[in-house]
Length: 356
Ligand code: NAP
Image 1 (cartoon, helix red, strand yellow):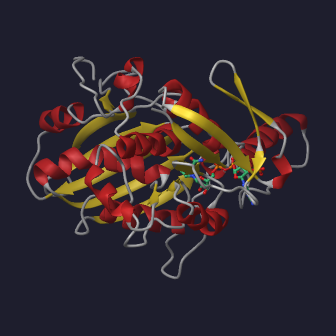
Image 2: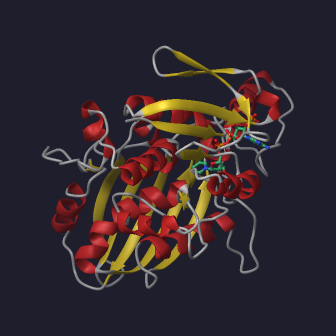
């Protein structure tokens, strides 16, 4: 049996990756539509090896008869159209931040809190967490289950693709412009992003935190445990795809580095690459295009009681957005991914390699 699937925001970074992920994992589909703004109507997007989808307008689309809508058109558009789709009987999996903290909307990372999905029956909307939150909670969960995390301090190194396709173009154009001596245009970011880093993602809040930092705090509490304290600093870096995070945790109970490594190795969807040598860790460009969350540089933080530090990297468009959304759809409809995807999917992953 196949499903009727609508991909909303299909021309964007996340939407295109959703189409790719659905195809790679052979999600059973009877009918699929690609929806975007009126600007893109009639544009063609490839789906799988051979299919081409003609983009249709979201504004007048009738979701009746569709089983699932994978949404990534941005917060205001999701706010308007996700409830309409849900009213028509189509379950929405939304990538924007709009619904995430509403108490009757589940916020789900399938490997971490699959049971939360049960909440979806109320409003037929499921929220996909922020990309930086997803990769961090994938690493926190096994440590929390074993030794209870009291506090997390995280600094992110977030790629430009996290801000959409226009932001990636800005990095490209500024980089080229510097070599060509052109005037640089800052339209997507508040400051020059080429050859620079910017400690400011999303808007500032009254307490001095940015909204991106606040998202990491409240989403981690909602997904894992309301008692975990999180302090985040979110930074945009001149990388196209892949977010890095430096994470330090304070545990209630002691874990040795080897125990932490073993717990992380056993977490579906996580791969540990941690050699204390040149190239013994993973960087964003190596994680780009990959489904895994990579953990490296695991070590004791001797400055606090039961402290551990580590480095987490993942493709923000894959596990940070599209893959997580498609995994939610698989969980919802009890779909098993294509066999050759099982090891890259997390859900059925075993990690036998010594190296990991
Ligand atoms: P993007 O590359 O800028 O793409 C935006 C998409 O939304 C395009 O398909 C665009 O269509 C569509 N859209 C814009 N206005 C629309 C409208 N009025 N009606 C219908 N469609 C409209 O952005 P993105 O990176 O894919 O991100 C999209 C959303 O996912 C954002 O809420 C973002 O916060 C969230 N998200 C992103 C990431 C990430 O790492 N990128 C991770 C998690 C969550 P047109 O091409 O026709 O304009």
